[in-house]
Amino acid sequence: MPGNSFGKLFRITTFGESHGGAVGVVIDGVPPRQAIDLDVVQQWLDRRRPGQGKLVSRRDEADRVECLSGLQDGMTLGTPVCLIVRNQDARPGDYESLRDVYRPSHADYTTEAKFGIRAASGGGRASARETIGRVAAAAVASQIFGRLVPGVEVIAWVDSVHQLRANVDPMTVTTKSVDQNEVRCPDAMAAKSMAQAIEAARADGDSVGGVIGCVVRGLPAGLGDPVFDKLEADLAKALMSLPATKGFEVGSGFGGTRMKGSEHNDAFVSGGFDGRGGAGPTASNRSGGIQGGISNGAAVTMRLAFKPVASIGKSQHTVTKDKKPVVLSGVPGRHDPCVLPRAVPMVESMVWLVLIDHYLLNIALQSAPAGV
Image 1 (cartoon, rainbow, N blue to C red):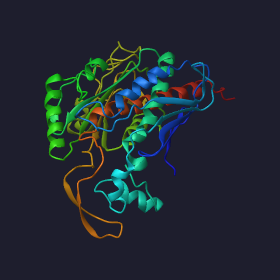
Image 2: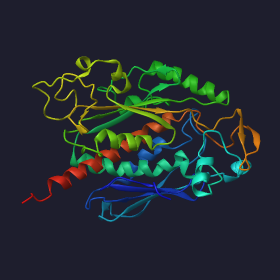
Image 3: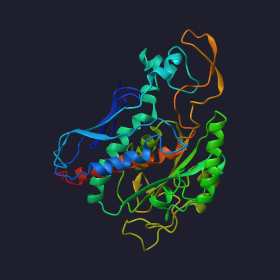
Image 4: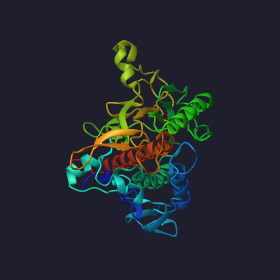
């Protein structure tokens, strides 16, 4: 099955199904002699695991990480790093009634159309449980990147749920303020209303979607490669590869379409050319820290849309594998009524994976011998 790997120099390959024996990741291209703290990896996984509260899936998984290769006494060997998490609360029997039914807006039909077979329980590779490998790999990447480029921050937060929008300043938001509540929204008043909306959806057997905001602060200028490897293009692919995503924008995004060029242009100013965050070398930052596909030293700002979770408790019309109409009386299993709170660390993880890959590509380019 293609499509399980991401990255060029820092390349990850995730594996495992939602209700299989384990999920995990193989990371290739990890530089040697890098100190990696597995406790930090565990902390990242703890942020995304289910069972943390009443707003998320009640699947009870500890998600304890194990390292099978690539580390010795906490140091990378330069060989592939393999990290796994064993599934301990899988319940494939919950999905037996769905073996011959296509769940609405799931990957059941499309997976079968492509491969002629699909995992009968939990969505298989289409499940958000696959993202464990991404988060574990990003926890490794962030530790390495933090030593190569100190001071870079990647912070994501829940910006909206259904029709509720938070008021968050990307230049001052902190991880601590994001994690102060279950919703992972740093706007406390908005978070309270969002929590009520998520609880109401769950009580009604329904689900809600929303938007996650993300900012990269302290990123130096020069990351990204034209034409097909632009920084925002790789960020878009990385983030849109996450389950349930339906839209991506950087900087002014779609809002910029309602402006004129004279209103939208970011004027260069004499200060701010140190390439270390803030407004950078421009008086405004409608470009979102990226111009011509290359970072300009300003904060990189993004927003990512997530659809409502497809697994709901309400009755829905669908068909069987034999294309016979049937009424599905709710999707069994344990599901998030809103994926956004647990998607926050997933978004941050994919951004880190893009950043380290582009940084290593820059090093490779700069170390190439000059032409004759």
